Amino acid sequence: MEQDVYLILVASLLILLPLVASRNAVVPAMAFLVFILLSLPLYFGINRWTGLVFIVVIALLALTAWLAKRKGTIRLL
Image 1: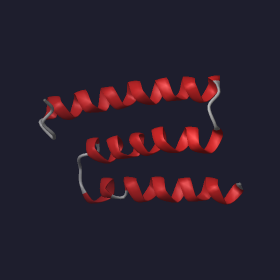
Image 2 (image 1 turned 90 degrees about the vertical axis):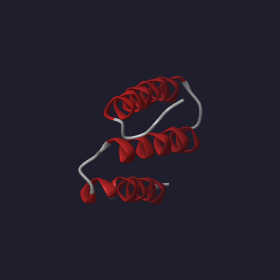
Image 3 (image 1 turned 180 degrees about the horizontal axis):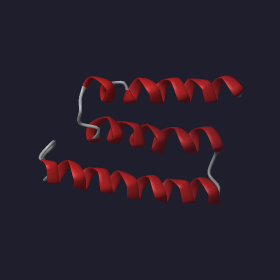
Image 4 (image 1 turned 180 degrees about the vertical axis):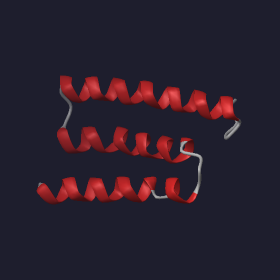
């Protein structure tokens, strides 16, 4: 179980690695938030605390997508 936490941390750092190479943090942040959305329920199960974190991460993902659209980094429909 402890190894899973380290695996999640290493995967998160690998996702955020393009942040070092580029000065635009929007796309790596979106990839990181999607990764968190997928890994949290798988690791901790479904309960009210993961539901609350899930809602917060979805709000952060929506904010990040709005910032990406505003900066012109990505084009949304």
